[in-house]
Length: 481
Image (cartoon, one colour):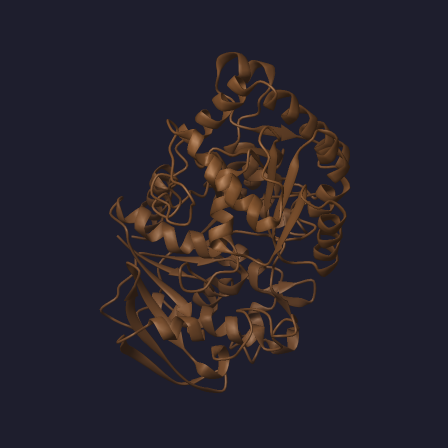
């Protein structure tokens, strides 16, 4: 079984969020199920730098304005096809944003090219690479199933995987010809979306199957409240929709072997977490005191992640006598508010601006609790890492957070299975109640330790999700024969 995966980022070469973690970890996981994966990614400078002595497999005389080529290479145990198109990808800034923080003006062409080349490869552009299934990840690869439908190609079955419905890739209708799509594709049953070209919508309409990254999110997006304008399409295609949880790469995220930690530990040596706690406190300028709960936030600083709710609830954090440390970047005003809160509460509230992999691991490995008050959360990896590292997650009752955290209600506590604290509704008052619940449980260290150990004993790896993906791949491949 051979799978072509197509996405815009992949760990460890380029990462802005959980999408990269999934594309980096899933190939290794499904390999245990007999699935061989090759991943097509854009040739950003960081990717080209790591491509080494890769082989040029195919050339394109013209691709959105200039020549391009595919480089076949293997990096960090991943088989990659790198789309080397300097006019599209060799530029400063991030994968999607220019140095000023605005979307690149030609993102439609940049990611339309990625999807079109993906369709070419799936259809046999490199005869030696015959694929049984192709999986397009998020809007950046969303046109791939449309190119298969409208390009006269004989390709394998396609899957459209939604990691975050908030980002849909909408572009002006007059780019249809530039993207190489025929006029007949611009209909409600094709790529048209409220008068624009919808990259994600096209994938959802044209793919043979649709996956989201948790079962609960797959149910939520059928509603107008959570479907973000696409709930009607999801309902129409509900027979092709399945939710498969993300996993955690437990080779990278393993507290017993993690080189980022100040001290490694396991469920039998939780006392060693204290070293990571102190390292995080020092980095954030917090007082190194015993007995106080340390609450962490490791997140993009956005409305989706509920960071504004956290800011509203810092008075409750102070009231329960806890310390707070935040690590992340994003919305400028949220950053400014966190900086002001840290300045006004020296030694008790700390903010580390930006993202630092080592600090992310140390906060997970040293904090008593981790906040995830997301307004919507397709899956989330932070709560998986938190539980695996003995930090009790405090999460809103949405999406993948429902599926991966067992609430410490009376029933779950009585039978000893709880791993965290869920709250609803996703409001400041809801979060305040959850923080007070956490403080009450934390006061009984024996009960709190049981939550930690329960979380560490959960199987948060890719092993079960990999079996579900492999089953879906085989089902689609068998249907096409």
